[in-house]
Image 1 (cartoon, one colour):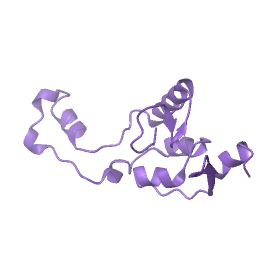
Image 2 (tube, rainbow, N blue to C red; image 1 turned 90 degrees about the vertical axis):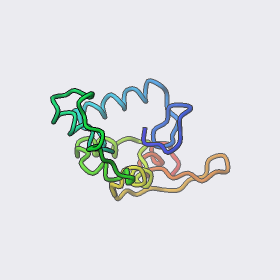
Image 3 (cartoon, rainbow, N blue to C red; image 1 turned 45 degrees about the vertical axis):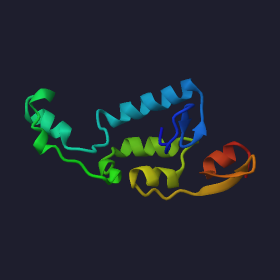
Length: 129
């Protein structure tokens, strides 16, 4: 969740987590979104307009945008607050993916010789600061 080009092991903001943790976070996030999802095209609006029949959508009326950040603009605040509360949360990564600017007190740490950005909350929980 909220990773860029990461597909192998379950991760939340680039932090490797267990399958159970990933499933729990995903389930709670979806619950808080209450059916909302980022909209990269107008397909769902057209779907409802034509009586919920995908086959009836006029292809020439489909439109999208290259700026994925616009797709996230209506994310429910409850879901944003939940995501911010996660120990794995990374405000910079969240903003890069969603375009939603959340000020957070991130810190930079070095793990196995590589720089990582994590939330101050996570760093404190891990005893790093």
